[in-house]
Length: 254
Image (cartoon, rainbow, N blue to C red; front, side, top):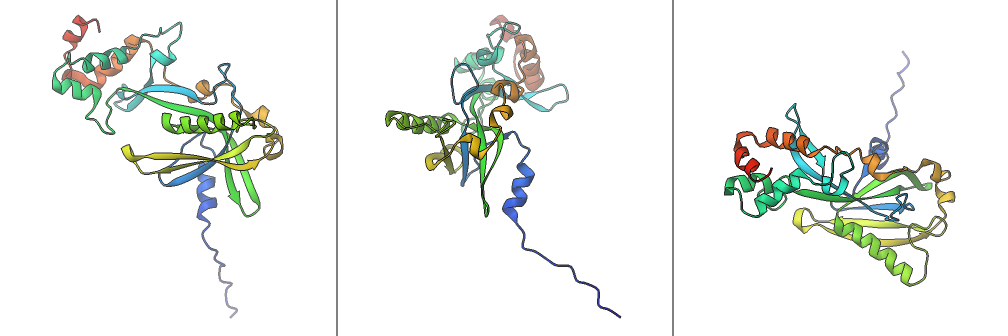
C-alpha cells in the first residue's frame, strides 16, 4: 500500500499574519514597547494642520447600557448643537467642589488613568503605514494615526527643525520622508520618541494614486457622536442615575 503524502509544514510568519489582520483598520496607534514607521501625508484641512484635534467624553451609557464616547461640543459643536458642552459644565462644577466628594469622584474619576468623564483629546494625522518586508518597504493606507499631545508635538517639532534647516519637511509630497515613532512604558510613565528615517521618496513612487485615496476630512472619518446639550445630559443621567443630585444640578443651571 502506497504511503500517503504527508503534509508539508512551514514556520509561522507572525508579522505577516498580524499585519493582514489589521490591514483594514482605519485608525492606528503606537502600542507600548513598539515602533511604528509612517509617512505623514499633506494636510487636507484648510487650517494646514498636520494633526487634527479630536476631543471626547468617555464612559457614558447609551440606552442599552453600553459605554459610549460623546464628542465635546467645545471643540466639535456646530450651528445645530451650539458650542456650549453640557458635559464640560458638569466637569467644571465638580472641579469647583460644588458637589459632594462622592459625586466629584464619579465625575472626575479617581485620578491616575481614571479621568471619569473629563474631556480627553487625541491628535490624528493622515498617514501611510510602512511595513518592511524581504522585498522592500510596503505602504498601506491612508490611515489615521492617533497620538496623544506629547507624541504629536514631537512629530511637529521634528518637522520644525527640518524647516529651520531649510529642508523638505516630512509631509512634503516630493521630498518628504518616513518617521519612526517609538513608545516605551505604560500609563503615566509612557514616553514617545520621534526619529526621521532619512528615507526620502516621492509619494508618487511609494504609493501611486495617493491623492485619489486620501480622506477628504479627518474629522468626518472619525464619525464622532456630536449631540446637543440636552442629549448629552440624558447620557449622563443614564450613567450616574441616582448617584448625582439632579435637582441640585438643575438649580445650578445644569
